[in-house]
Amino acid sequence: MNLTEMKIVHDFETDLAVGKKVQVRWTCSRQHFVGFGKVEKLNKNSVRVTLTEKVESYPIGQSIRVPLLTTGTSLKAWSRSNRVEPKGGY
Image (cartoon, rainbow, N blue to C red):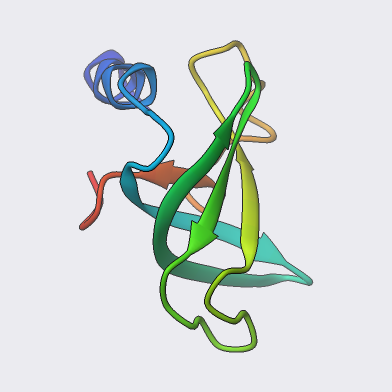
């Protein structure tokens, strides 16, 4: 990830608000999932997204928590497969 990409992520994450529609990517049991939802809760290290559509075995209303990069979370926790992003991706 270069500085331009980090700036784009920073700008998006600092603009997050409860209720904002987002795309969420997460991993579980060595599988990768992508879904759409609304920001349910924000804290300094992570964001919780409530799914607005079914994603495989995850029902509508399921909460998914992913790390935020802009708060100093290590790149080990935050990744292209474990993040929140604008609908349609970056």
